[in-house]
Image (cartoon, rainbow, N blue to C red):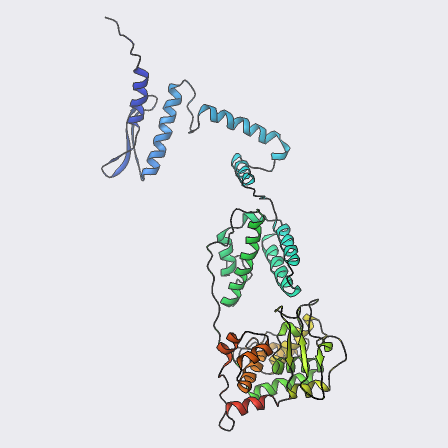
Length: 441
């Protein structure tokens, strides 16, 4: 009797080979063991279940294609999907608008971003310029704009201004802030405080959040990057002897230097109020009101320095006496350019015995510049002139609100950092010591 065809035989073959090529855990190893059309007998082991399942699917696809009468293909795509992919590649190769894409995947990702409203071809230069324009339109002061502009320029110099903002990654941001020797970072090989690193991360977060708000990126690369916190450095006030030494050196150098250090030491002015970057607003002689009766004052305007509030600083008698012989009717108190003034300021610090890099004042005193950075010199404390003024003022007034208003700071900061710092000496109690401070000239 002849063999009769079974109408279900094809379905049986389809089911059998798929079952045979299914991965199993045998003797503790993921394995594929079975027999299938085209492949014959299969005996293979794999290190993980995922790899075994992937290889199983490849084998099943090969056998399926073979049974369907097509060529054997190392792919999981169906015939229809392969045809679509082939046509898409042809379009990509012939359409000039698509020549910049290297693969179908890039085109798909671009289409995805466009469907989400993302414009992912914005360069670092374009984004930076738009960010500055936005900050300007929102009324940020020129001092702040200059800081942001300088940070953007530095970022563009390191990574190339034509780099796309969408290409920044979290790892790149971490390395930029971390600043290890091999990192792409402005901090590499330098001693940088936690406060500086945190400030840089704050800037980057603001910039990339702006980019995200403009629909230039899907997410900020700063997300999940942890802050370094801030240094909790102790506030230091100069002694009477240290203060007098600095005043003597400044007076011997120039009227400009004498005015700068006197205003810093006795009116508590910030460095950026007296000599900011070139082009920024600064303290002018026109801002002073000298009185024969009552307290002379200095108005620090809204656009001067790092704060956006106005304050009127009452000038102590010794400072009025210092300024009376060197003041001018108009013009900037510090007329020198920012670069020139940096050299003068560093020279006076070094002359007073502090550890200072000599490159900025070697034209003033080349011999001092060679030794000014020696390890045995005490480190100059940033803002110590202003800290001294506030410390001694608080000791005399004992009113944190009044001193906060005078210094342009908050009462909480004044109380936290400056209270009870003056210890006095055997001969002078703290109050008398503070009064003696405001008699120096």
